Length: 606
Image 1 (cartoon, rainbow, N blue to C red):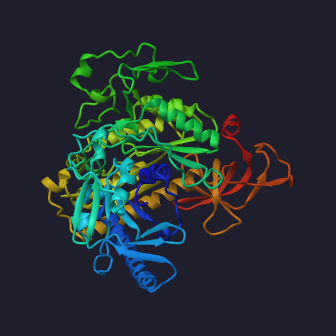
Image 2: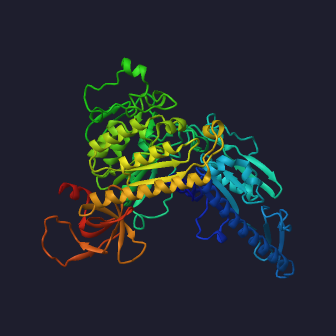
């Protein structure tokens, strides 16, 4: 699996689909009947890694072909009662994508054996972006499936193995026009190296809500789990390929998410991350007229209106003159816009604030995070929930992409530098202990030295504690690739990227030394540190990595306990522990343990 957390979650969906079809996971590609590579297409560098991996897998297929030919030669000389044959053109070394199938019939046991070289499939965003082009690269893969075609994988694999025929009706590349019911069709492609299959139809309603993911790790191995709540993106930022590889936004039914979170809590997970390409634009209209839900606090919400979270009992869903003039003010943070009118999907819908509130109430000991958001979707109700719920993570990811209003306009981000900074100020005022992370793209089309300086000054002002930073990589189909020229020299891009990386690390170090060293933090233990089995690693509520210089601690955290008790217990994965931060660098905090605790107890003690 390559790329984002959403791809990790999708791989768990794929594992569930294939398990139900009778497949079992294996550890080594040499042992597999099918090798599926879940891919990322967000930048050229990500795709280069995948091309390299496909070349490695092609070598495995070649090795299997040679081994089968040797075995065939031995079988033909065998007089033990086993008659064999090699089918589908495996005698040609150049046909590495041919389904090399050795069929043996044992006359003594009346059994038939069929052995195949592994099917190699490309899944996800790169498959959706390149489609049949992937099948034209010298037998590197046999199968291509887009992000909305995972239910179809058992049939596609069988067709690629020559065990059945795929539906060869035409497929769609129009991400706006297809539903999940239509995604059952696929194209069978005859290439120079054999039969290959492809299904890259995007859906307007597929969320895989009814599929229970097969988690890679039990909570005793990793205490964290992902829960996908929505798919797709409607923002159409000029640089971004996601709307073309993931399709239109659609949200899972509210109840199915709550049920999955409850199940994870019962299984022993201690942290979940709500996922979506634009996670905080979640809007569930599956109840059509606006379903009513009563929360544990006794607050009833109907059609997305939540009086407790909106701030005032008088805050009704009344369309004012100002709201009619500005269709965004009702849904977005002030000063933010989008290329679409949000009312079309959010009126009479259960929205992200309501979902976050309800999820946080499932289990007060279950830490809740969410990613990846768009800054426009941080209205006050969401900020109030983050502030008021102890088990909701206090790091907010607020992708700025640039600090220049003119670049943001070319990027079609829907806000100015001033609107973004106003939102940051509002976030810090409402959540004093918040940490803020971001995304930045440097060297976007036409970016000048002055515009780059604007990004540097924004970063100095906000002091991001974490950031994902890249130089611009043109993606076909996007608005930028069609209307702008990628005219910033590669060397300039790399120089500017180095500058923003260095600045971010410098600012993060200052923040950590100023705000973290000497503080008491709550850490969820995730495992041993990478450098020592005598130290543990975990994360704070603000999602900062902490290395704890011990693997034992007091059985119970008592903040005013001045005793020198020697009664220590081993700390385990999934434990919450109070720690004192003793040192820090730009990306990691270092700490001594104070004692095991819980989320409720830690915050009750102030």
